[in-house]
Length: 448
Image (spheres, rainbow, N blue to C red):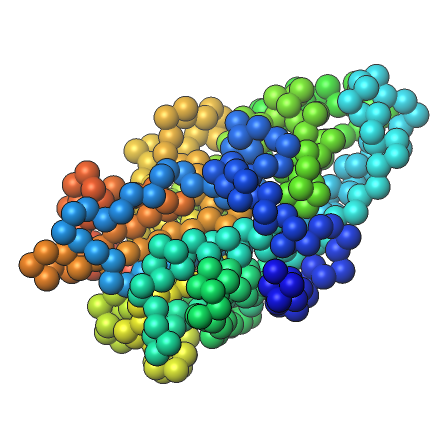
């Protein structure tokens, strides 16, 4: 245990200064109830945190059908739980300052603010997020360790944000620990977010945003909550955007402190969860998802890399890929048994959309949630979310593919899969025509 603590402290220097408990000490608590992380907040509330929800399986992992076995696996994972981004943190502090500037509160649930100090850092992993990544590495070894040998180690990449890099190194530590330190994969490649990067969504200059739809829904669901808060703190003059920031504190403060945030009492009293969750669904759908004209094209580069790895053929792509890196066996090796890539939620959404996952019969309505929608951010991109593509060898030598998102088997109807979610490799490759055609002209629109 001492050696493990040293490793995580050294590799996750981005949060070494924090005053929170170490990743190792929290890890035992997570394992006590891994299905729903024990943070002092009910699962029903955690689900409304959307992309700020902690990871837990969306379904129980099911082994491949009889006659099939995994012979190659591709793990695409979001970084673990983090502190607020710089912009979000600034808005949260401004909203809290407004509430603390008043003379009195008429709602006792605000009384904690009299002595409250905002202590969250920005952008980097919290210890809970490091533990999530470590546990994911453990799980990967236990489930797919037979695909790895001394000469066939996992090839691990990360986008260059520190939270992605630190998630990758914690994953490799967890993988090694689960193997009894017989295997020790390393972070092989960091992709710069200021250059061609298939693990980030910063390259499409003309891509729009979800702001119009988000503003429309925010004005609807947040208005009564804002009114309640302004009545509870006379003179605070909060806006709906302030309300959104305060609601986000329930999740962000909880994963940082690893206990229920005092903001969660307000979150639940004001029933902010359903509205907050749908705001995130809209943000992802109209940000880099199906609702954004240039959303899914930002996932094409990774899909083409995935096809190359699955088929053992050179990458064919004219979008986000770095042709120098992807053209070298040293920086883009083919024939490995396991690949692991660490990315961001917005990029995972673009990749899902490029592949055809989580289809929506109707576009999300920014004025009214569809209770039956398949597009729900908490199931798609919680902290430490993962899409796993398994290449299967089935009876008769048939090569097949299965895709899981947070352990839930994707139906893959677009390539002829039946109830088991399995389709032939050839059919899967054929189904990815949008990626193979470099976005059918959409990539050029990013710069036109």
